[in-house]
Amino acid sequence: MIKEVLTESKNNMHQAIDSLSNDLATVRTGRASTALVEKLKVKYYGTLTPLQKLAFISVPESQLIAIRPYDVAAIKDIERGIMQSNLGITPSNDGKIIRLKVPPLTEERRKSIVKSVHKRVEEARISIRNQRRDSIAYLRDLEKEKMITEDDTYLGKDKLQELTDECIEKADKIGDAKESEIMSI
Image (spheres, rainbow, N blue to C red):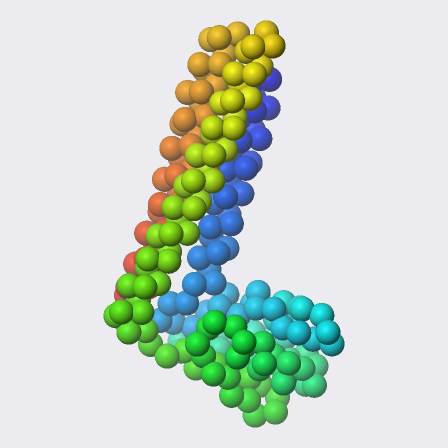
């Protein structure tokens, strides 16, 4: 019974970490990255579609993102989607390829982005701790129903705390790596 609770908790905690990783991949740094625009929703024939399904996205230079639509007629839709996003980058096209020149970040903007990263990391920590809390409450319920012993409950709590500490450490490492990437010039 305890193994199932631990397994479910581990899966949920790792989902929080994966979500954090995916979320931070879209955060703009000083360098161009396909992750900045891949998940960008573009209105294509009345349907919001991720950009990665509409175009081939590449980074030919460190400050440039090239977007080659599979359907040339979608260029205007893709440009409109980029302009409506909060990237702060103006697209330019030659009729076949959309180019996004990623300007270098100012020191003030870098600090603002780092604050946003810290906020997202803290949200992941909270999610992990909430999962621990819910699992401990479930263990207590199992103990009240006499399905597990008091010793099993304490053992489960200890294992949950170890798992929580491990996952929070991973989240912090992901946040620190992103912060150093943002602050490097």
